Image (cartoon, rainbow, N blue to C red; front, side):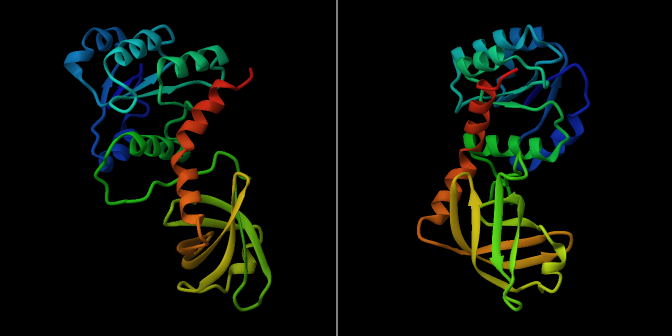
Length: 244
């Protein structure tokens, strides 16, 4: 993956995060050089900081899309908060895979990069499940009945994969007595406009609960997998319709 950016602020974090996915990171500070030598460089992915080089990302994106499709070369734009809606629409039209927020040391954005890479490339990684960190606190939620006290426990999901989730209860004292290994049956997991039933096992209980999914209602596994896998497309669509 080539990082086109004026500074090396994100090089260390990105390099560390991309290594398990089978990528090495090459930092380039001259976008003209990248454009002129793109065939020789032959990258599998490009991460371009639009704030550093606002005039160069469009010709580079147009050039690579004339040669390679989205599935063959991942092109990610790093955009500041003031990124124009017109530019976001242009990025989608030219074939950008996604538009990322500017702080690439943020856990959410690092996980988004991982999601996108997994969607478009076959990667070798011991972590077999794409993790999703919600952009909004209300995006994902869960409720279940405490197995001993039979009280209702509600809260939000801080991280999720098809394998399990990190759950932050609205009232931490309500789950303080849940031991690792406890089973939580018939939990209600909410995402988008759907609610599915899952059964879980507690894998850790510290500031939040670590939950392993044991079983899903019929069709629930597919619904959650589809939701996680479509995250990058939804984010790009949202960026193109964003108002100033």
